[in-house]
Image (cartoon, rainbow, N blue to C red; front, top):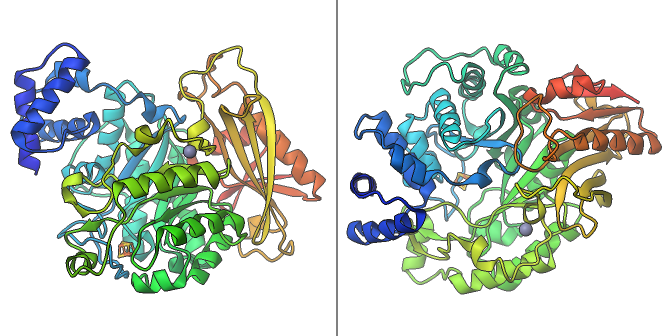
Length: 530
Ligand code: SF4
Ligand SMILES: [Zn+2]
């Protein structure tokens, strides 16, 4: 697979055209020649960077220019840097999950993010720095970094490895652009708190850190551990909210654990992203639809974000044998597409962000099941989705834009959620949002002292093209004070509800911003008396 890609790149460099249209034509010709699916520019860029780093090709400024695209990467206001931990055994036995030698459980060596990690030998420092460099080469601002650590169940990794891995990610941002290296044997930093402190004032600040784990691994101790690492968002492998489906797929946990983890995480201020899998063995389209309804109608769930991964049959998984014996039938492209449009148009509330609609698994690895990788574009005309992602303002912000404050409230297990957003009058354009949680537990009962009796701000986010830290750009919703106005509004609401304290789960790199608003560091949170 890789060698086909490599030959593709070498051939492309020899025949580079001047225009994007001709480049697309060339890509199609070469894909047919090397018998691969037409790669995306992002895929090509990764492989090109890898070959360059390995000194297997010479630099081609012309190819770099043609690959210069993906403006969308920093249009959500932050530079997303996804890194992968190395392979460790996962406690799960999930039917559908592939196992590939030397790859973290559930990841395939030909997925774009995994290819990047392999070329950096899974070294966190090198992964972060090469990603920052490649974003910069593509003309993006990179000083606000949203770090996403992937690789299966993070909580199951040895604690010492967790600490080193995250410390190295911080150090890579702190040092950048000082050093770029792929040497996995270099001495690694285990001075996590020192690197975090440095990051508060660094040029490349980690404003959010996402870790992925299983619901049954979340308890009070793990939450304290996640906070010490700087985590602000958790991706939970939920997959289904029905016990019979979880059992059939050998998930090894029940839905009660998802409910418990969700409450614990929200009560500690985390944002929660559920991974959900339609089409699992034991489910049906009707049952999947009911699952999405219940996700948002039941107070037990209500995630802030969703990654929807339709079940596919992959070669190195237990599901493969089931499928071969004729005991499992995956969804077809058409069924999945129709299902998603219905879910988006009828169920998804405006406080949710659909992060992903399909996983980045190359079509060649999918033996059966939905393969439509450009699903978002395919359903664009049919979708009336009101989710955050479908409304967030990109580069098309105008200076005379009319902006109004909108407030949505919903009750959840353990507290009230107030979702504030700055939107256009028809609510179709979203400029900024804030999630405020008013816990209803007794004021002194939280296991984290800083959170006792406090209202919780779980997220503040301003959309639009990313602007550099400490700059003002009137043509952009970032840095025109929307975040600050939302904070003041949240403080006002918390006061009205009788809270005497408000706390923000702040990414390490945003602490300075909250200090300016009168907040002080307490435990790992930023807190203010009301
Ligand atoms: S817990 Fe996640 S990584 Fe582990 S086997 Fe299940 S799906 Fe795969
Ligand atoms: Zn949407």
